Amino acid sequence: MSAGFTLDDLTELLTTKVGWTNPGSVDPTATLTEVGLDSLAVLELQCVLEDGYATLLPEDELFDASLADVVASVNHNNTNTVTATAGG
Image (cartoon, rainbow, N blue to C red):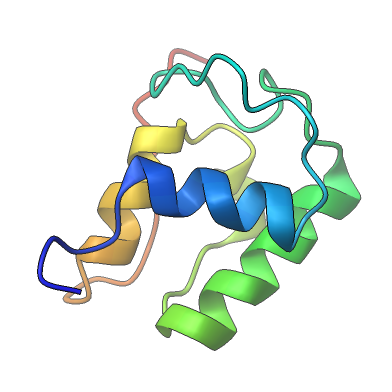
């Protein structure tokens, strides 16, 4: 996994583990809710990433985080948290 966790990896997790059915056009700046994930799907993603990548993704920040924010958080194990950059 030399390239690290990518947007493609996140898209695959969303479709295979979380049940996301709309991966046709992936905008990395879109938030998880903007791409159509409901609260249960966001919680499922949170668990998958915590278990599989040892990355803490706080639910309250995760809803406002873009797809790119989630990818960056997984790749940044020093802080292990999502920092939302999407406009509120």
